[in-house]
Image (cartoon, rainbow, N blue to C red; front, top):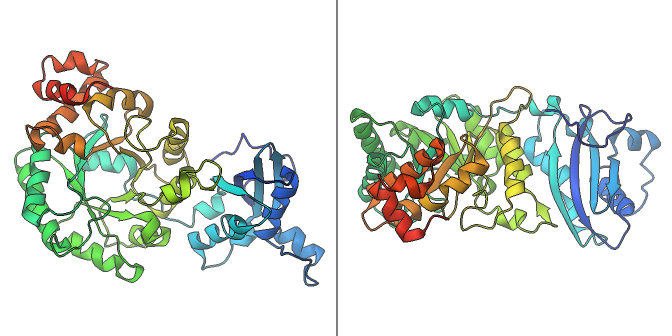
Length: 411
C-alpha cells in the first residue's frame, strides 16, 4: 500500500511507522492537541516521569507529522507494535486508546489507519476475497445479489430454509442470517444450517449456485466450535459480527485450516463508533482491520441508496481500502445493505461498480407476490444496471421488476 498523499516529509519513513489521521475538536491549538495525543498514546503521561530518557522518547515516542485545521497526522514507531503477542487488540489500544478520555479534547476521531508491510504481513487477510467468492458462485463479472432472511428473528428452521430456496429460485446468489440470529431456541444453529444446506443442494441440482452466510457470533472460546457445527452441517459460508466478536475472533477463524468457507463480516454496532463525523472510529479503519484479520466480505453502506445514515464519499474510501493493493493480501468484497430495493439499484451500482454484493432484506421479502418474485425483481434491477438500461425501461419486459417499482418507485 502506498501512502503518497500524506505530508510525511523526509524524516518519517512510512514503512517504519503506523500512520494515523485524527479529526480533533479542542480549545487547544491543533499542534498542541496533536502533541497531547502522541504523548498519551506512546511514552507520555500527565507529568514528566524521571524514567523517560531522551533515548526512550526518540525510539518509542509517537511523532506528530502534520497538524493543520482540525486534522492531526501521527506516526507510531513500528517497534511499539513488536512482539509475538498483542495483535489487533494492541494496535487499537495504541492508536485508539486513552485519547478519547483526554480532558483537553472535546472530540476526536480516528479517521484513517495506514499500516506498514511488516505489520500487515502478520495477518491472514481474506482467504477467498472477491475473486474467490466469484469462483465459488461462477459469477465472474456481475455484482453478487443477496438477501437477509426476514423477519430478523422468529422463523423456525424449515420456514427459514424455504425462504432461502425461494430466494435462490428467484435468481439470488447469496443469502444470510441477520446479525441478531445465532442459536436461539426457536431456530437452533445446527438444525438451521442443515435445513438451509438441503435447500442449497436442491438449488444446485436444479442448476443454480447459491451460498448462505450463517451467523456464528459467540464468545471467543466458542467461536471455532460454532464454526465446526456450521461447516459439519453443510455451511457454505459463515458470518460474524466483527465488532461484538472482536477482530481477534475473526482472525482465529481465518487462520484455522478447518474453516474452509468464506467469512462474511457484519458491522453490527458500528454506528456507536462511526456515526459522529468528529468523534469515534471511522468505518475506513474498521474496513482496514477487517481485511487484515481475514474477512472475505464486509458491509460498508449503501452508497447513499438505502435507509441507513450514509456518507457516500466515505463509503467509496472504504471500498478502495477493501479492494486496493495491500502488500499482496487478497481484496475483500464490499457489501451494500440497509433499506435497498430494486428502484435504487441503478444509483447504487453507478457509485459502487460491479465489485459489490447487494443485500436486500425487505426489498426481497416485501413484494406481495412473495420471496421468489422479490428476488427476481432484485436480479432484474441488477441486470438492467449492468447493461446500462434504466430500471423503468427494463421493467416493461419484466413484470416482477415492474411490480416492485410500482410499490417503491425508481429512486
